[in-house]
Image 1: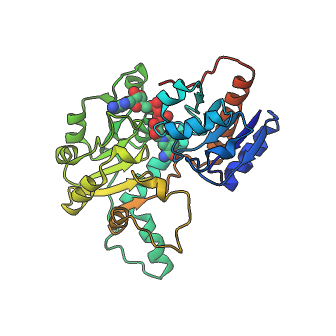
Image 2: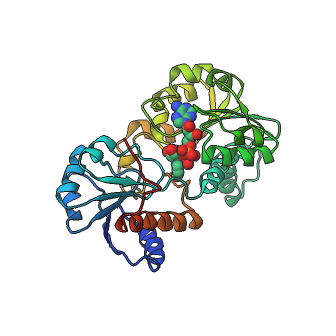
Image 3: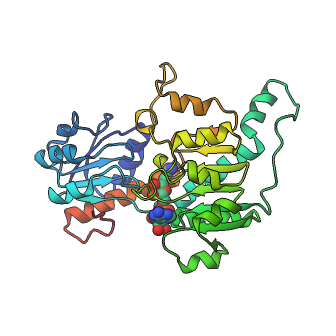
Length: 330
Ligand code: NAI
């Protein structure tokens, strides 16, 4: 099958080309994002492959259908960027990679927690400058602290297992419970109790109309003074302005983000020689207790291999008219 990749980087080309030896699809890699101006570049392909920040709205889907595309293959887990109703109306199938390495994201969550707590990013620079003073580097023991996880799916539970290893008390909230939650030793609770008791809160739910700006002024007000807030899920789950307010009042003492609600205009690109126009983002960067990574939690060699493997298998299943195990429906 011919597959056009949008927004593809050198690392995507490498992992997909390697894995495609087993599948034999024709892969066309484009660097441009998918949008209304670029959709027609898919002409001649039966499938397109897109990533988290490609905006696949009704207009784009109409153009893809017109170009002859039958399958939209997401090389990611989240699908909040796709108008699923429009896809269904046009007869376009959508597939995704529901889980490729929960460990990659869970371990990055811990990297953010540990870096913010022990300030290794600041210590690294100090030591390189011959400054061995410890003032400002004071951390706390993770052991015995309470961590609240919102979303107890694959990644939330992988994070819970690591935190239990550190000796943390783990609270969790989800719209559904599973036996694994209790097996791991996570205390299932309601959101208000989680906000009130957690020293660290980490988000692992998808972005949906219900979770959009879940972390707003009200939620921040319910949190413990000095809370650490971590988001490796989707940017718009946090109302950034509310969190900036919380940082200024010192209600929030640490903020770790791998995702940002307006990241689509910034992340995965090199802006080091340009002027960043997003004032809200730049305000976030001005706090020394805010650590931001550019949506890299998934980015391990293991995860990249699995993403390519599962995406190309999804495409093969479609080509062979098999049942699509990873289909996404409206
Ligand atoms: P999953 O589907 O296994 O788990 C999501 C969990 O969230 C489910 O248990 C679901 O019931 C729960 N949930 C849904 N609505 C909720 C709500 N309103 N309140 C509380 N819980 C709710 O998904 P997985 O694999 O654990 O991924 C979680 C999210 O992480 C994805 O949706 C994606 O947005 C994000 N992600 C981020 C990556 C990164 O590189 N930063 C990479 C992969 C995923």
